[in-house]
Length: 357
Image (cartoon, rainbow, N blue to C red; front, side, top):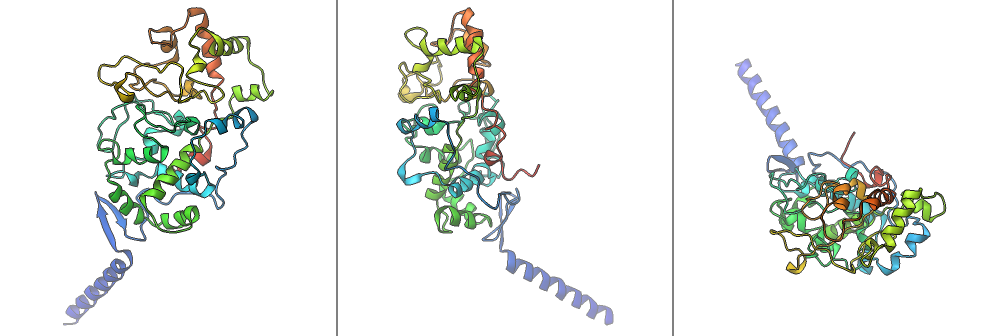
């Protein structure tokens, strides 16, 4: 009898413990990953953020860049960059909970170490499928005056673009409603939304605006090219000859489609078309958007289909508007190397806040 009473007492204690735990956690399951409604921390853990937000909104850009920015800045007045807004955007950019099975984030296909591009010809989506095009690097998109995004410019604004990979059935596989519910369940977001927007309310519009703020904040301005333009360094003979060729050679100069100082323009003098039987690009006109040439030495492979493996192949090959005479190849390569900003690929404020290493 004593043993029976003891067994009953143990069962009551276990039951009470389980009841107490469940009443506190209110846990639900999502594709095998536990999410706790209202109080959850994701399987990634908590994002590691500084007590005071990094500076995203008031970067001291050198004069040769700041003077050019007003004429090509696509930032809308309704979504100016703020430190807290971009901080929230950084967390969202790297949060794999924005994908169907918690395996892919924006940062999975736009890697900081690769200048926010991907070394794979086609990136892998949440279920292992391949993307339709090569991952376009995200540097200096703020300077693309029209604001149109993607290789085919199908998105009119960055605010619209940042939501599309989340909804893509290959890339991240979520509906916007699913994403909003999932993000709302995570414990670390209410405080971040409060700081960014003055309210703990989480919705698709705020997610879009925060992501766009973070992406627009990724600007390169600390390359050798920038040092030269500030009088802090000098070009070598080959680098100088390469710059001269880049800006003056022929009727269709490189600068006509890649305008200094950010080497990007949404109004190219001769829209580029790379022959592709399976992809007609912008408005089916066999042409494609061009990204910034900043950090181009760190973003291979090239073009919308990743079909060009190296800069040498691009300049010496049979690619429309890109091949140059042999004597100019090394000069141009030398100049393009000066556009590399090594700080942006390691700056902690652009890094994965979930990375504990």
